[in-house]
Amino acid sequence: MSVRLTLRDITVAAPRPLPVLLLLDVSGSMAEDGKLAALNTAVRDMLHAFAQEQAGGAEIHAAVLAFSGREARVHVPLRPARDVQFDVLEAAGHTPLGSALTLTTRILENRDLVPGRAYRPTVVLVSDGVPTDEWEAPLEALLASPRASKAVRLALAVGEDADLEVLTRFAGEAHVRRAAEARQLRRFFRFVTMSVTARSRSATPDQAVTLPDLGTDDGFDDLDL
Amino acid sequence: MTLISKGHLPLADHAFGASVAGPAHVAARVGNQDAWTCTHWPSEHGTVYCAVVCDGLGSRLHARDGARAGVRAAKQAARQWSRAPGAPTGLLVRLLEVLWRLEVAPLPPDDCAATCLVALAVPDGSGRRLVLLALGDGLAAAETQQGLQSVGGRAEAEFSNTTAALGTPHHMNDWQVLDLRPSGRVRVLLLSDGIADDVSAQRVPDLLTWLAGLEGRPAAARGQTLRRALRQWPVPGHSDDKTVVYLHIGGVGV
Image 1 (cartoon, rainbow over the protein chains, first blue to last red):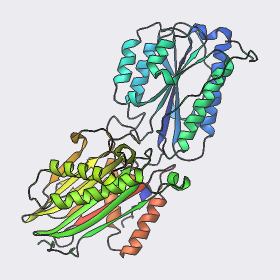
Image 2 (image 1 turned 135 degrees about the vertical axis):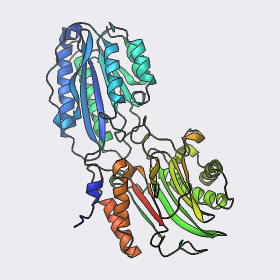
Image 3 (image 1 turned 90 degrees about the vertical axis):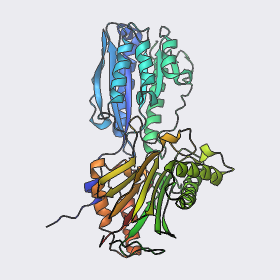
Image 4 (image 1 turned 135 degrees about the horizontal axis):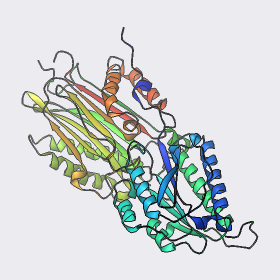
């Protein structure tokens, strides 16, 4: 007896992914002035919001890449946000940005991790310092790679010591902001969260992203970066 | 024995298609930005079959106009090109590109950007010539005695909704072309990316089989079934417009 095919048998069972990669500097200096605590809170809230997003459309997938010590590591592997378990990050050591960029390129070029039917990924780089490894060649490799170069790239400089020029070369001037206080860091992450969730529901999820102004430090925030 | 007859659609041939607006466009009260046709006309040596699917890029202001213009341009180009036996496919592509720009004028081409799939079957001696063209991320496939061959689909370096299209900067060699001379039965499938992205290459023959199962139904019921199936697309979170065209030439008795 032949069984009649249905479209459910023929089509893929998963929604189209909308990948978000967070590249987070967790070098020793992030432990100062409450920066790491603010970052952990903002990332946790973002991942929680992504996990709650059930409006249909694209499925948000998230990964957290942490860089400190000698090289970057995958803190949370790329997976549907609802399946993400986030353990707080700890800060120590140097700022191996080049290693983080190489890892990012490797992930975005991997069609098993990021299939062709995925929407354009978003990569968010957060750093408070100056790279301590060779980063220019890995950045050029990312910008020249066929798939990784097409990602939406956003960057946040945390505090006054962050190398704005490096972040600008990564994301372009229009896609870099500086957070001098915890509230601005939270505002940046809230904006990225809203932007990604709006894209996941949109008829045109690959529309350009415009970063807002993060506001000024009015001296009334709970943490001083 | 061939069932192709001059000026008539032979009994054994089937051609149908359907297109529906995706849930995202329905929710936003935006019209379907895909367009399609499946037509035939008589020629000196038999019947010419032409199928077209165009998908207006969702981010463009006049995507719907661009897709419709693509269908008109492809049909005009196919009619003209099919009158010149043995003409190179490059001429068909160039003609289509020029006619599309004339069709969208005076709108800026970039505001009308659309992907384009064409299948053209032209009588050629005792057999036929089958040309498949694809610019962008839809899929055009043909099943012949030589097996399944296809053009289009998502390029290696692309993500969803990033694609080459009429009206965007591209080279002539961004057009993927299959120029076949099949004998016997031919089945052709054109899919906009709203469907093609959700059907793996290994499953395309199954989709052909599923569509072949609709061949025997009356046209009205078949169209209704097909549109309902596309509206109730089983992939979670699907949002795109969806268009499919199916063409079966030289069926029973060939």
